[in-house]
Amino acid sequence: MKLQFLFSLMPLLVALTVNVPVMSQENSSQETTNNESILEQFDNGTKDTLVVGIAPDSYPISYFENGRAYGFCKNFVENILVDSLNKKYRRTGIRIKAEYKDVRREQTGRFDLLRDQSIDIECGPNTIVKNTDNKIYANIIFSKPFFKTGTRILIKRENQKTVEEKPDFEGLSIGLIKDTTTISFVKLLFPLATTIHDNLETRADGIELLKKDNITGFATDSVLLEGELERDTRIENPDDYYLYPKYNLLNSEPYGFAFHTKSERMA
Image (cartoon, rainbow, N blue to C red; front, top):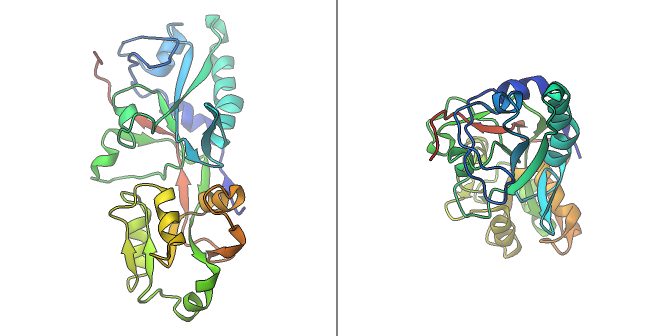
């Protein structure tokens, strides 16, 4: 995989200083309600658990198997973030640990668990977005990049000749997950293509449309498409598909940890 890891611990710790009051958390060992930042709670010893929201179906970035979290996000949190927090707050006598929560289980919006402060931080394939009026990102901020990928298009090999003859995708259709940054980029890059995204809620929806030949290609983050081909849980015959372009990425998509910006007391 052509992936670029951008470990940036200090900016992440700075981001944690945003006022993030913690409310009652389902399946959490702690139930606290205050108006202190995460680091302030660690500093005064009133908090010993970092509640991390995990996108559950984004192999290899973040995913759950048999109720347990796996992937790059968990490894980063456990081996870098939590370890550094424990070194920083050793004098308090507490042992900070991480707890993982499936951010999609409750059928809420993408960042709603951050907004209602059920989690402290969210990790997944979150493209860093700045200066947007999109309500999806209301009260949401991102850390500096910890990972970088880019967009590619998953296509059936039986359509390879057609795509090679029409590299601008004129008259061809590209599926996109709704409410993602990929939509505007693909429309700009392939203005002659038909884009389909209003009813595509998940990556699974896009792959299903592709399998049924309802679209020519499905565009999303390369690392996630490579993961789909590697795991072959949704794609039974990975050799029947290929990624376009073959060796390059269509753009650059930096991932960041997501935080909320609220500082109001939660009831």
